[in-house]
Image 1 (tube, rainbow, N blue to C red):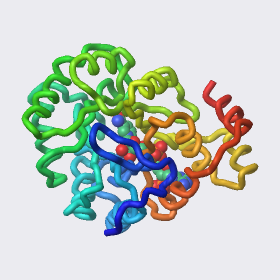
Image 2 (image 1 turned 135 degrees about the vertical axis):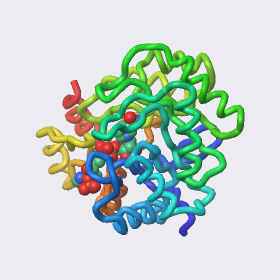
Image 3 (image 1 turned 180 degrees about the horizontal axis):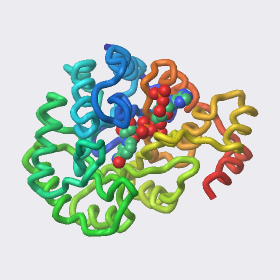
Image 4 (image 1 turned 120 degrees about the horizontal axis):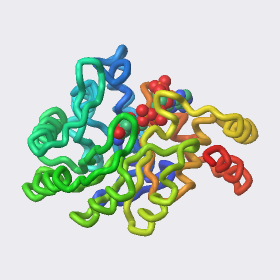
Length: 290
Ligand SMILES: NC(=O)c1ccc[n+]([C@@H]2O[C@H](COP(=O)([O-])OP(=O)(O)OC[C@H]3O[C@@H](n4cnc5c(N)ncnc54)[C@H](OP(=O)(O)O)[C@@H]3O)[C@@H](O)[C@H]2O)c1
């Protein structure tokens, strides 16, 4: 496996004591349709993971709930023993039901089981970063995270987790988590068209905490906008490239984890995210989410 390249667009960021490339990879959609079951093209999925690492990516986002277990097992098969530079970020707090739903599972015993499941399926002794996934499929929901987050802090103190983060969280929950223990990232839905967290991103940047947008390309509903198409046409670039470049330029604490099951898209996204957007481009793109 190649040594990581520092020439990926955006350079690197430090999560606690872990250096990661700001251009990462989100593995969720490597599982079957609606993130259930095995992928249609298993060899293709393994190839994408290996290509991501070969291209220098050192941040892979996953969860044992993807598949369930499918994504973690693909990561292990493709990449174990892991290069020292690679950091796999996982999340706990939701499970899967037989209909493919994502019911919350945040009782202390649920979280302990999920941490141990992730350790086993990824074949690791310690998880580099675990996000506590809050809310539900509709998005963040209010309520205290103290008991659930406290359980993860205990597991961290036992040496099973290096760093903690929160996901699908309200601003109040981020503040509550920070009052209990340090967090190194917040992973929430955010992209050109969904800018609810604008204020939170700026606050976290000032605190030195990473913001990791999920669905950076729109997720199951790919981003579509005439303004995005117009800027992309002017730059002779793909709209997805422009969407990623906009995120990297939006704030230095933003880390990208776009998903793809295609090595061609992976390469296109890496080169596209390095586009330089002018003030005029950014003004036009900013209007999409307002
Ligand atoms: N914390 C949470 O609650 C939560 C929720 C959702 C997701 N996540 C994380 O966020 C990561 C990213 O989310 P995501 O993968 O669902 O959504 P995404 O990155 O916004 O979009 C992925 C989709 O975009 C397509 N795509 C990628 N590159 C493309 C390109 N160059 N041209 C055209 N289409 C392209 C992919 O299709 P192809 O396969 O055809 O390329 C895939 O369907 C996930 O992998 C997961 O790790 C976290």
